[in-house]
Image (cartoon, rainbow over all chains, first blue to last red; front, side):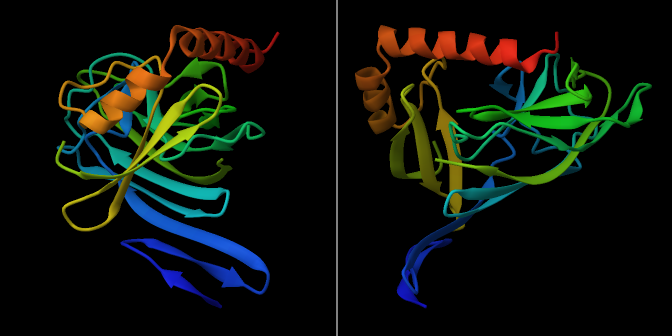
Length: 150
Length: 77
């Protein structure tokens, strides 16, 4: 491999005849957790980790969220993505969700990222009902997966 | 904004603004802004200028239409 190791978390270069680009970074706990489309600061929660690694058009994202006693307000929970999804990317993936206040661990939870999407939708039961925030009850999201970016 | 603006990338026909910033610890932070969003008052001026330039009524209308089309695809019959 020859190439350039750029700034923080960034590398580019050539392997054989294939040009690569690489970037990694963290997602801010004050901005990546969305309720009703608006960011909710979960930095006071028990666990609040979001990160990404992008290699070419493939982006791996990882979220570990435990809201603890943070008041999340009300509305559908979504997760802000670091990159816009590709126009040919439409994916659904399993996720681990916990719904305090009675739901417990949800058995058929899924994450959805739509074409040209900039956030991941979170569903409590397959793709039918959204995972909804609560002002009083704990919410947890554990998810890791890849999607195609532009 | 606490982070230092590093790069603005314009992607899709809907003029999404992909923002790369450098955090205090030297790492990258990413976020994407869409034309249906209201920018924060303390948003970087360069981003505000880019949004003002690119997020026309035509772009906003096209994004709204596209999202409605996606919603139809999302729901089972």
